[in-house]
Structure formats: C-alpha cells, structure tokens
Length: 339
Image (tube, rainbow, N blue to C red):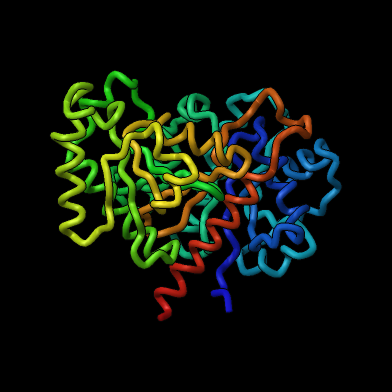
C-alpha cells in the first residue's frame, strides 16, 4: 500500500508566466494522471482567472490548513493564504514579483515545518525577484537556506522518464568550468546523489555514471588532462567508499539508449552537458528535483514562458511529472522511515 502523505505545497511562480495556468490545468487533469493532492499557495482569484484564460471553468476554494486542503482537493483546487494579485499574462511587473516571492516563501515554510508532504515550485523570473529583494541565484539555493542546508549540499537533478542527470556546475560561463571542477566537488555531489537515490528513489545500489569533461575523456591527455588528473581519482575514491560509480565516460556516447541502460544517473561537468540530453529526450516531462534536503522539492524543468502565457499553449506535462515525482519521493522516504 502506498504511504499516505500530506498534500503538496505548490508555489505560483511568476504570475505573468505559465505557472498559474498549469497549476489549474494539473488540477483539472488530476484524475486522468492520478495526481497526489496538492494545494496552491496564494493567488486564489489569479488562479481562477488563469484557468478561464485556458478555457477551464474550475472551482477554487480557500482553505486554512493542509489537512483541510486534503478534504477539499477532490471537489476544488485548494488555495492556502489570502494574498492575491491581478492576472496579467505575459506582462511581468513588480507586483507580480512580490506575489511570486510571497508564495515561494510561504510554500517553502509549509514544507520545512512538516505541514506539507512536499514542495513544488512554479517557474520564476530571477531578475524580477532580484528587484524585490530575492538574494539567491535561484529557487534551489533559497529552499536550501530555508531548510538549513549548505548550498554545496543541495544538488540539482534533472529527471525524466528516460534519463536522470546532475550538473556539477550550473549557471557559469563555459570558460570557467575547468577551473571549478575539483575532486572534492565531485565527491561531495556524488555522495549526496547516492544517498538520495537510495532514500528517495528506492534504489538499493544506484549506478552513477560520471561524464568526462573533455572530448573522448581527454584521450590520454591530448585534449586536456582534467579527466585523468581530477575526475578519475575521484571515481576511484567513490568506489572505495562502496558507491557504484563509473567513468569518466566520453559524453558523446553516454546518452544513447545503450549507454543509458548502464546507469541510474549521470553526473555531468556543466549545465548543457546535463540539460541538452535531458531536454532532447524528455522536454515535456522534465523535472528539476533538489537532492540532499530534509524536504522533497521539485519543479517543472521549464521557465516562465512569458510569450505564450495565457494563450493555452503551454504543455502541462512537466507540471504533472513534477507533482508525481515529488509525491513518489516523499512516499519512498516516509516508507523508509517507517520501516
């Protein structure tokens, strides 16, 4: 029997983006996709407007607790919190950024305090949030700080039906990547990944493939020596610790079907090395999930998509996948604790 969990807390994201309409669309399709109970945080009127813009006439009901949200969920989209705003799709502004930050803050607090079963964050515009006092590179770092976890131990994993990847370095210039790759970074992130796949994904002995930095894994130093000098020794240390790590693997063949069959997750050296294959294979179902936290946090792996907001064109697949994956991980963790 599946472990029972409290409803998920869902932040709105930027209200001018596709987040609100996709929250509404996910609730509308809750039975089709067997979605876990979830509760939006703030923006009841805005969500109703976003639903209508998408051609959905759905009931929206304010609730006072996540327990009440569980009771309401089958008949209406539950919303906790009285704060709200105007729905102006495709027109981001300061008022919307304030609403997005308030929703993110309160949704995170619900998860950290144990009142919500997990957290799903809607897509934000980081530059807009920065204008209203958001002093973090992204939502991952914000949630990590709220949960009392060092940024280095909050690991971003991209997950889809066909692939899981973890970028060692994220939003940095490609020219800076070689100088940032260290044995300590590889070891620290790989240990978090191994623990999380065991605890949250139910994999007893997760297979971790580590991609090479250079073409052909450096080809014996002809194309750079980082793979032999840094990556390979880190993999040896991980194996000595009992972690099933392999590599460094040449990235050009790692993500073919035959290559994917040999690992449960690929740790990649830089942003595009991890995200290009994930988006090529699972664009409409990709999920960003943060490993290493005391809570479960997921997010659809797409942005605000301002140009198509309110036009009914945004695909709900990634939002559905993010909700389902967060619930699955929360159940796996709860079952492990109960064992």
